[in-house]
Image (cartoon, rainbow, N blue to C red; front, top):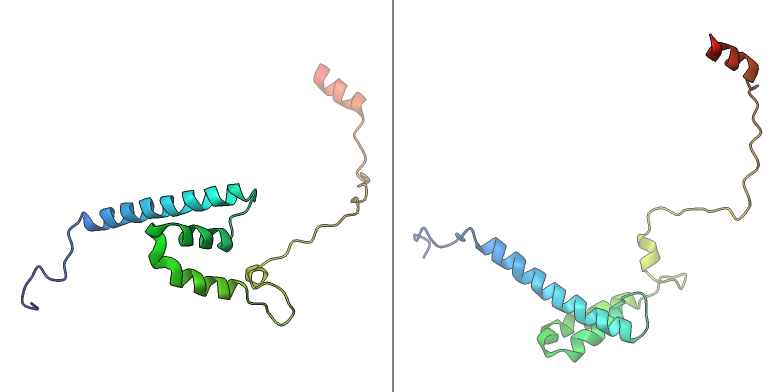
Length: 121
């Protein structure tokens, strides 16, 4: 088997076929999960919606173990009692509720009369 030159090689069409199959699988999974999310009148797709989709569809039965592990990870809390997802934020944006102070123009304005004289010439 190791002496065979064809073993270990893949045809050029294989990556295209695999990527198309993955695209079709994800489209099916996300479409059905989106339907569940909309039926719950939710605006955000969550792990719980995906879990319900995987448990209700026989096609996704092989993902049940992954969903169980994912839901236990997602339900973990850190020592402050916060969800783990805000820990992934890298930057926080501070927004002031106060109105910004009015900027007073300090540079003197040029006289409009002098501009009119230049334009007439």
